[in-house]
Image 1 (tube, rainbow, N blue to C red):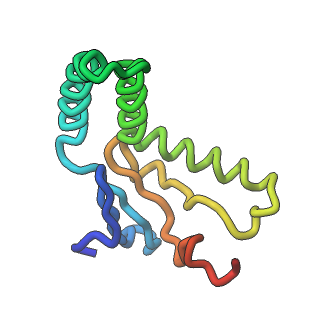
Image 2 (cartoon, one colour):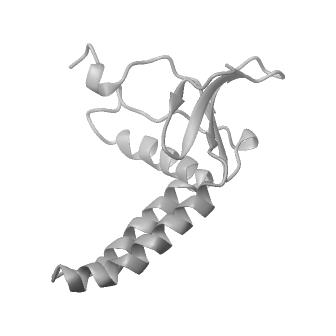
Length: 133
């Protein structure tokens, strides 16, 4: 689709068809310059966290908290890691009572990079809107 079917802060998702196979896929594309934007934001927040802690007498490690946030954001930018996590999630869910209703779409590694995640296309419904609740 020329327009994204879903959008998030760090990426957009498109529906596509693989020319060679006809398979429908979802393609999640990282927004341009996401790494630089997050790095700048984290630097600014980290720089301000020390003075804010002193001014407001906050009894917590704000720098450490910001560093942990930063690690989380960086992990979200690694679509290879996201593909690995999807596979791990799908394997783990097989051991639960949700195995027949909850899964992650299978990644298509040959069409994925650290900034582009391609998965099989799934026609389904959101859990919070499921008719099987």
